[in-house]
Image (cartoon, rainbow, N blue to C red):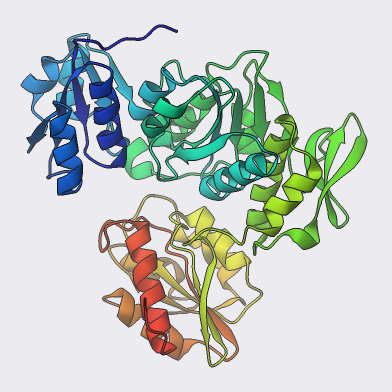
Length: 454
């Protein structure tokens, strides 16, 4: 596809990682770029580099007159498409796309796109590791942390771009075309932005929109909501632990296997998996499914699995102090993912929960809390909601800071026991992001253990 911005005025909305990368890419392609952000974006060195490329930085409220003067508007995922300045541009017929869409128009290699409510980052990282173990030129990026726009300059026909994509990124796609599209799972999330589950699901479904009969859709066969979205033109290759999988990846006995028309061939022994929790095993199956389609031999898959102990902030074991193990699951940012976090432990759990409410019902956690969770420490804006839903069934106390929450949880924990950060909420009421939240939990836990941060 021929796509050019040479000589065009392009406004990039949002100065996070995606926005900075998009602005640099557009400038390298000959566009006259204005980067608009409500706060000073990036670090000083990054802004100096952009200005050296001719990028204008506009700090302050997004101005409708600026956006309406553009020939193209590119959104960072944190900027809602309904933002008034963006809407003003759209009403004038100005194209509005996201950073993922922009970058994909210039990629030479094939795209493997991975989305879902929980497990995107783990699946994306492990998929890329499997491909690399097989000697393939694979890069991981997107919502995972490295903007796809940074990969354009090194893309070539043999490259495989493994891209984590969020609902925010997918809702601003138009021609985005993955060779393999993966839907890890689907449950209500981000209802503070999408408003309804149907709108959220529709954004996720866009991952399949431009696929053809030559492409692959990899879907969780254990998840009815995910299966309902996978009705496109691509060939299906499923994964699952409970549902019958005729063509895809599942578990037989103590082995992850590939099923092909009723025949099963061994891929990876379960003993090689270093990740805790049943839901993280599902991520291993999803990555194995992509690896199968990409021609990765089982030995390379196993090497990748054996060398992967998980991501920071995803059921990350931090330290054990006098029989109490602290586990950082800051990425459990919705009620379903918090449930899976709690289900990873048989009992004697104290949970730190709360933050900015994103929708859902905390009462959905009652059956997993009963008999498993000894106390809940509630933090942030959602603390009253958590108390109202769980307080009559489990001891619930509030804490005003992460350090206070960790100390309170440690005091309440049985020996042996587990203190797990499973927020079920976003972080933006008290922290910069989920990384900051997890870092503060980790530091507070290590302080109790007398471990000095380096």
